[in-house]
Amino acid sequence: MTSEHRKDRQVAAARLAASWLLWYPDDLLLGRLDDISAVVDDLPDRLSMPIRAFLDYLENTPIREVQAHYVATFDMKRKACPYLTYWTDGDTRNRGRAILRFKQAYLESGFDAGNVELADHLAMVLEFAAVGDELTGDALLAEHSVPIHLLRDALAKLGSAYVHVLDAIVVTLPSLTADIELRMAQLAASGPPAESVGLEPFGVSVTIESIGARR
Image (cartoon, rainbow, N blue to C red; front, side, top):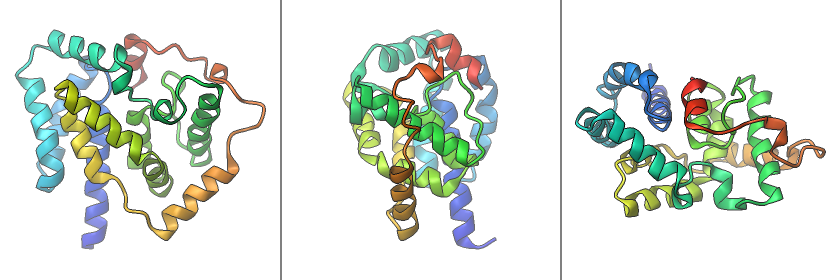
């Protein structure tokens, strides 16, 4: 395995671990912690240290308290919104079209995103970039790097342990290359179907139970 290939695999592993950790902390996540910990052991410090810090928080905090913190942070405060298009489009009609761009990118890559969570949720984008289409995932992450940094800063100001997860994510954000810029342009040019302009096509009701049921 070349060093570049190993680096790509490490980034993918870190993104998938971060994706899992950004979902609601239910029994499914608790059952994955040993696997996440094992993966983290093989990552370089720049990726492993922030994830390990969050795992330590999970280990030393009662699960009910973690769950309450998750709800208070991500569901009750718009300043820590995990939906990337909220940062760019707010609660506007344009946001529906922006979300559909994510959905279309997943479909074109043969990635089954399900229909329980909106396609622009950061955890969903990270999972797609890790196990779906790396180039398209890199393009989506690069295009939304500013919202990701803003979310990271918001979590830091809130004193949330979830800032550690975002610290790991920020390390994996791609540098702009010619291939990524080309894919970003292709995504922007294709856009969503013209007749799909709202959130209704998703048929989604985002609740704690639905977030947990997705995986």
